[in-house]
Image (cartoon, rainbow, N blue to C red):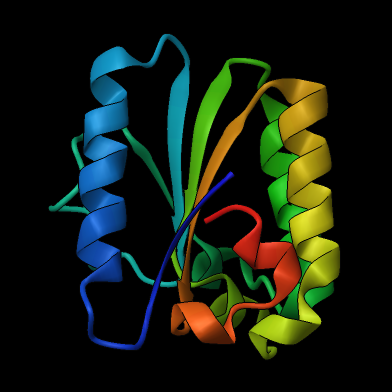
Length: 134
């Protein structure tokens, strides 16, 4: 798992979009981009599957965790999953999202999927369960 972090307005979304587009160049499997808006569809290469959680009514931490698990389980060819704004989508403070990070770690190990996430926080404000992935 890779974490792209920084305070709001520091270019995390641009960085994760660039990362997703770059991953497509070497990926042998599918590249998925999960966010809560469809406005980035023109910034992502067309081969990247954009999933806007607002279109399927994902709500809260449990909803997001279940959605992520469903995406991974739905296709064994998924190689990269990019998640822009995990705390915003889960609608909880970052420090309360350990269970999502634990679930993602397990999915990476069990299904050989690579995750990249953005979090809005300065490095010194990252909880330990996030900091270990920086």
